[in-house]
Image (cartoon, rainbow, N blue to C red; front, side):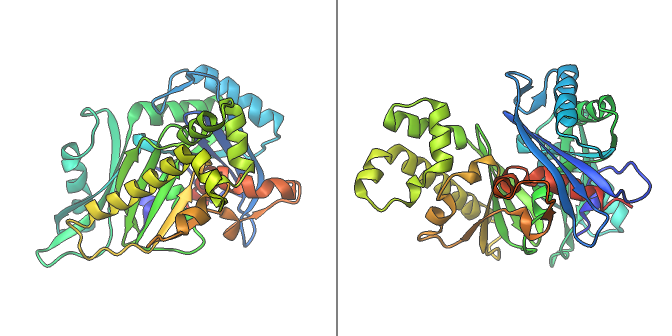
Length: 357
């Protein structure tokens, strides 16, 4: 499937180096990727905590302050590329499979856009939308289409920030497509679980396309709170424990009892993933999902992948961009694993810049 049709492109030749930016609810991730060689090289990557209230419900509320904040990060960390790709994620990137009668490609695209108001949860004229076909028509001649939409306010603000940074926007990418771009293997039927701070996003991929999404109130903050409540520590100490101590890998029943709230939170998240798959298969009985890919900052919790692999009908793995990109020698070896996970979306967004023609 040609995902490049989903986003607007703004430039002429493939650049040699691109900055990818992933703005989350609590952190911003920025990565620079050198695209000049046979294999992309991450030359710079950083994650920084955002000031309180700068992002609210996925929207950037203070564009001027965000621009100033990002400019300091870019200058401090010596980012040098002049091209940028922003990635829109979470509940602000609407992705859905719809069907339209088989027609010439452009007519099907226009028909899908025309019908977008039936599906997109935004006010009319408040969002950008596009569509592309994937798969084959069914027996009745209905062609599957991938419909994508994002709020104009958010897209326009990102482009405004790019301009304020003196960068040239190549595109605005969709987070799930940024993740798909850095997969080790090009899976077709799988589930992507992006574990954010306040919530997680479940995306169903069928036939190689992200066809359905669901947001669940299970995020890394819930895990931190569960640990903090279990041992009476601060949320900051709980987050450090989550990253450095393999609680989920403990075999001791006393540990399970002590951290019961954490185990319950992880189990409930896994149940929501399977519930989402079952719901999708109500209308798509032929869908058989093989893999569960963990992404986002919450995926860095010690022991999570191994714990979820126990008695799971899905093969669970954590998104690791090192399978498709190299890291520059100037990035310390001990930092690469964490950066590969935390900055995966930003790196995938930067790679999107190399796809523009």
